[in-house]
Image (cartoon, rainbow, N blue to C red; front, side):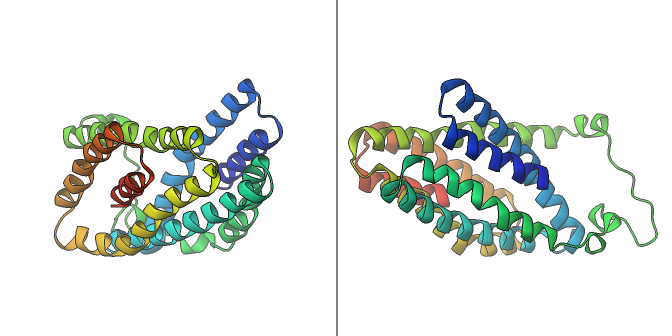
Length: 239
């Protein structure tokens, strides 16, 4: 997780100080690798702290705090870009890595129970699953395919929104920040509720709602780029 945070800081500094195409490409690679490191690592830490039974509630709690952080960060970065300079956005992102590392350092290693994370009984040796075992799990592979397609669709929408706003608006930084903040507010409100009900009622209905809203978002963006409709798209993104 610490390596991932440092990679985010490095990518932000590259974008701030060396905004040439080759360096931007390298920064995007660093940023993409970071998501593949930090997200599973935070999930593993959470699982080791609370165990399988409380994981759904903890996930909802994690996402509430993450959404609040995203909203606050977007507001600060939007103001920095609007009133200071474009590079101030990325310098702010790099500086925010420092409190993230401090927060990470406050987690003690003895709070993370490897056996509990594996859902093993007390005193039982937990054997890590092999990739071969995972590859035989047909349901898991189908689910991974659905998530991959969802992420490919979802990840492209916000950058496209940014390009549209940059062409149409003189206050692109502030408008873009507001479009980032809107879904985070929705996530902060809904995430603990979703975490609780995913355990009580099952995850499939909630996932179907999430998957079903994605083509609705895309259809709205295909038909209009008026700012009020972009806000609606981002509300759906939060859900």
